[in-house]
Structures are given as C-alpha cells and as structure tokens.
Image 1 (cartoon, rainbow, N blue to C red):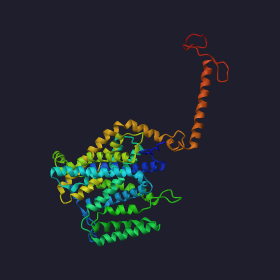
Image 2 (cartoon, rainbow, N blue to C red):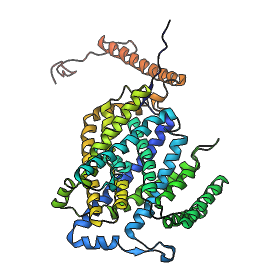
Image 3 (cartoon, rainbow, N blue to C red):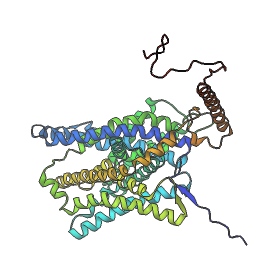
Image 4 (spheres, rainbow, N blue to C red):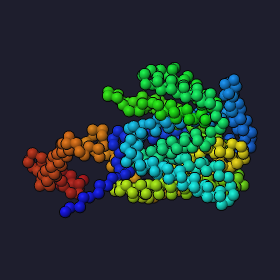
Length: 485
C-alpha cells in the first residue's frame, strides 16, 4: 500500500507579482525616509555635542507651545514624540490592515512564520534585558526598549551598503516590522499608559466611531477627516493613553481590500499620500529631537557597564538575531515548511541581525520607561544608538558575504527577455510567453544562419549571391604592380 506523502510548504519563496510590486513601492519610500532618518540622527548628535550649539539644542527641544486650555501646551520634543509619531503609527496601522486582508498575514498558515518570528524577536530581547538587569541589580522597567525594529533605518543601511537583497527577504523584513509595530503599539498602550481620564477616553472612542461611520458611508474630503483626526488625537493624548494609539486606530479602520473596478483601495491610496509625510518629515524630525544625546568616552563606557544600558545593547544585538532566527526555524520545523532552495539559513540570520536596528520605537519606549530619570533616559538612548550601530555593522558583514548570490537572484527576478514588461519568472506558465520567446529565438536563429552562410561564402571566395569575389592580397599589396604598397 502506498504511503501518503506529507505536503510541505516553502517559505521565503517568490512573491506574487502584485505583492512584489507593492513591496517594491513601499520599500522605495521607506528607504528614502531611512536616509533622511539617518541624517536627522547625525544632525541631532552634532547639534547636541558641539559646545557652541548644545545649549540651543536643549532650549529648542524644551520650548513649549500649543493651546494650554486644551491641555496641549507641549515641548517641541513632546510634539515630535506624541504628534509626529502619530503619523508614523497611522501608516503602520494601514500597513497592518493591508497585510491582514491582502498581504502575507491573510492566510493563517502563511502568517504563522512572520508572526512567530516577530514574537520571538521581541520576547528574546526582553528576556536578555531582564536577565542582564536581574544579574546586575538594574531596573527592569526598560524591558521593552530592545524589542522594536526600525524598518526605515534597516532599509537605509541596505541602501548605503548597496546590497541586492532579494524581494522575498525584503518582504519578510517588512512583514516582521509590521507585526513588530503591532506588538510595540500594544506594549505602549498596556504598559505605558498613565492615569486614565475616562471622559477624554470616551470622547476619543466616540470620535473614532464617527470616523468609522464616515468611512463606511463613503464620505470623502480631507477637510472632513483631518480636523476629526486632530480631535481624536487631542482627546487620546488627554486621556492618558499614548497619543500614537489614535494613529494606529484610524489606520486600522481604513478599507484595504479592493472592490471590483478599483485600481487601489482607499487605504492604499491614503497610504500612498501619507507615507512620504511620515518617512520624509515625521520620523526624521522625531530623530532630530530625540537622538541628541551627549557622547563622550565616559558615556560610551557607561553603556557597557550599567545593567540597563548593557541590557538594551545585548537585547538588540544578541536577542533580536537569535529570537527571529530561532522563531523562524521552530515554525519551519513544526509546520513542515521548507526554506526556499534559492536561500540559506545564513540569509535568515543576516536579516534577523538587521532587525536589531531598533531606533525610532526603541527611543520612544526608552523615553516612556525612564521619563522620571533624565540622566538614565539619555544613557538608554545612547545604548539604543550603540546597539543599533553594532547590529547594522554585523548585518552589513553578513549580507556582503552573500551579496554576489543576491545579485544573481535579483537579476533573475528582473529578467524580461520577451520585453512585455513582466519579469519572465512570472510568465513561465503562460503559453503566450513561450510563443513570444519562440518567435524571438526563431528570428535570432534565422539571423545566425544568414551570417553563417555569408561567412562560409567569403571563406570559399564567393559573395552572398554566389559570384566570385576578389581575394584579399596579404601584405597590403597595391593593385597597380602587385608589390607592397
């Protein structure tokens, strides 16, 4: 009796063509934003560490403005963290909704891999931080700092080092970051919510309900939604729940599946409009006013001696890489999924190391966790910068080792021999593709046959029509007397 074979699934395989196009467009914007984020972080470090400018950096960051009557007279630094990052989390909410209804997370079996990998990539860094601080007598309150991944910063590193990461690995990194953002949002909402103002929270929920009804009724116009979004954000801020939660909630309410005849869903359209604002303005400005920590030899030494800061560095560098790789391997092992033949586990480990760049959300959580200790807040920020830099360096080395292989894979993904605008790897099952290729190859074969006949005719002393040809006289002889010219 034949034994039934167990079906296996392949993960990190080739994306569908629409998914590949979406990932490419999303990552292109994030990469530009990541470069601006890097510039913002460098500008912050220079501004805070140049003696002639350092006082102005603190003065600008602590300058308060806004309507005091509405409880919104905030410092520039708070406006960046609570206001501008709400735009970032709004885009994150749309990304998550799209992944749930049309992306990698819509199929529970396919979603298991990135979800488990992301969860392990958050749990292990938190455990590393906790163990480090338990052993060193530090504070456990910062356990969530090394749990986040900054996709924009990671993509900026890829752009700077010039590696050709295949689309499947880029999509895996993007999905990891989306799931990571979701759980980071839950951590902020659950563990870093101050005393609740139930009246303001109720108002925020009511305004969100109005936002949802307007979307379902098909009401259009930025002049309706932008003022309503500001009201929701203000009420959420005054409720004691971190204001970025308002951005996530609104992003999740947008419809991200397409109706018949639609080229783009409303969520995709709005994400296309808002993502450049988030990646190009909101996040870089947050970095400018959050990454400006004083750097000195003593400060850098403290990063590796204090348990809180050492826990952050080890969590980002060691915890992230081992957590994501371990979660991916366990999921593949117990779901009988196999790694794509084009990739190796070393590639997964390199991406896991890259995910140790925790810049934006890690800085935000660091501010929330240690808000009562300004000195330790700056030290933890320095630890985030150091840990992210080490993770980026390790990932760069690992990715460069395999870059020749990545270039070959990317070339295969982009090849379009039949010139129809669709990469050939996506047309292998289309009979029309093979007919087009047959026609192209037949034309090439006919041209080669013609050239072969011409060369043979020349070799026999005949022209192309069969008439005799004048043999070339070696040595450059002249036609007049047969002697060398």
